[in-house]
Image (tube, rainbow, N blue to C red; front, side, top):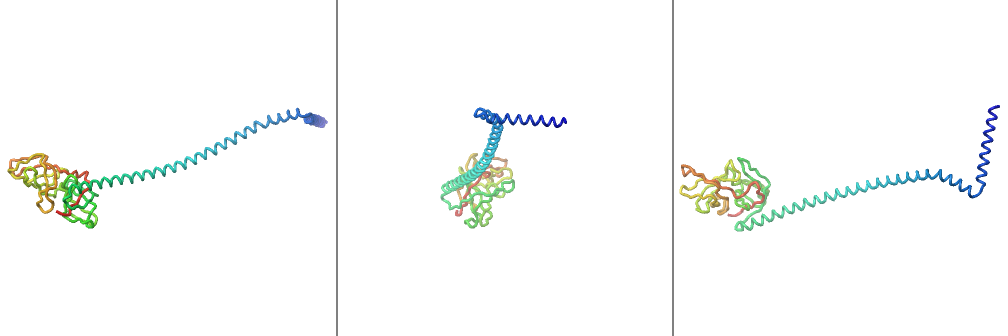
Length: 271
């Protein structure tokens, strides 16, 4: 009985609500506006939220688009940098080649009286016992054993072995080297040999007993011995060592060529 009564009350309340809504909807334009405003107030926050979410998503899309563009730009810059580095290396090679050609030209002008073959050093063995170099010209270029090799500053040595494309040169500072020389002031003959202790000095021996050896005097090839032409600069006397026996005295000759920095050479093919 109680349940039926409660259900009846609920039914009455629902009916009243429906009637009120009917009245509101049937009350013309003002009430319609009020209802629309209510609906609008309810919908607007949802719409604003959806709009914000849309903008956020669009912003993320732009972010990812920017990232992709940056990656592509970085790739292009990396490729451009590689191209510039390659161009720089090529320019350095051209610069080196030009400098080498200038050195060859200067050497050729300096030793115009000789017929020569230009070359450059590709290997060095400047140790205590062996002081040799290898140059990039050989039999196919016309190089033969015992040919004289010179640098811009003076005598380098002579060819001791040859392949088709390379030549081994025994330098004048090698311990096995022996060069017949003359002093510029007295014109007297001496023999210059390589030493174990020094990579830039020669030992001048067999100095005539009555010879006045002058420190700073220039030494050049005498033309004797059958290998080196006459008149090629070797170096200068840096020290004179006198002994009790004048036949044993000797001098040190500072080689004109810096063998540590030697790059370009000329091989003399005629004497």
